[in-house]
Amino acid sequence: MEVKPPVPQIPPACWTEMKDLQEWEKHHQQRGLDDKTSEALGGIFDAIYQMPGGGVITASTEKIFNWARKSSIWPVTFGLACCAIEMMATFASRFDVERFGMVPFASPRHSDLMIVSGTVTIKMAPMLKRIYDQMPDPKWVVSMGSCANSGGPFRHGYHVVKGVDRVVPVDVYVPGCPPTPDSLMYGLLKLQEQVAHFQQTGTRAPAVTHE
Amino acid sequence: MTPSAAVTALREKLGVEPALEGRVVSVDVPVERWVECARLARTELGCLYFNWLSAVDWKEQGLEVLCRLDDLDGGWALAMRTKLGPDRVHCPTLTGLYRGADWMERECWDLLGVVFDGHPDLRRILLGQDWVGHPLRKDYAVDTAYEPYR
Image (cartoon, rainbow over all chains, first blue to last red; front, side, top):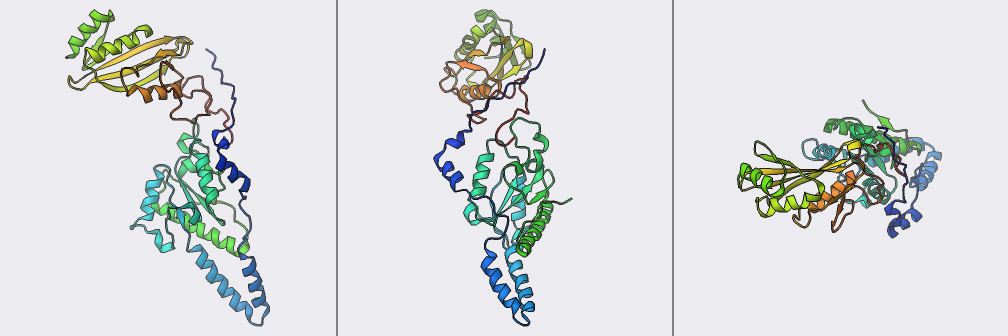
């Protein structure tokens, strides 16, 4: 018997009819590629740099600002699947990401990091996008685990997004199924490097995958 | 009721030939007697617990709906099967007999496209309401494009 694929006739997605989401699309700002907040700061730094001996001051204060920003990343508590268990273990006392200054915070509006921990289904993807849109700039995304990276074992299934980077831009990919807490912590340290790069150069580094 | 007594009752009242394997009585019924068989199981055989309902896609032979009704007191179960026939998707609903059949039949409609006639609320339950097709059918192409994420 000949197996014939159905002709895809996709109606508009139901969430496009929701009023508040239309508002979001209207006011939605694309993620800025450069640092919006440091413009005034850069002017002050330039002024100090022009003074005799100012280079020493700017270099050390840059370091302090850099350290302050990268050591205070607040991830939004957002667990999707079994990877979330490992993420919770990372947040808990044994592995303790609070020593990196991370506070898992239960509101996307106060957070600047989203750890996509698990399988993103097509039904969940618009909600994930919405949470991402609610986070203030500058914001970061860590894709945790095979499912979020590429779809993983469900890549050829019918209902899984083949990688969360089709929905939101990703900064660090953490492989594993699921990644151990050590692996996730290494990924978070890589993210700190990305944050430092962003602070120093004003542009985002290309996404990294650690082995 | 014991399984062997259930086999006798099914044979006498419905004229079907049940098979007994361990504590499970399995019976093939035509689709017209689907509700009748379930009503007999509920009212006379004591199968008060609706365990699950699902379906199988046998390609050119069409769909087959299966369900399992448990008699928790007697410790046995009745497995019912019915073939819908090629290119036929209509099956009568069991929601009039078992409240638990509601969501199972919605799932069966969602994933396999069996239309349960008389179901009070036959909507998709797992996939989004805008989904096209029934993905557990054998002829469903899993890599069908789905905007905007695939």
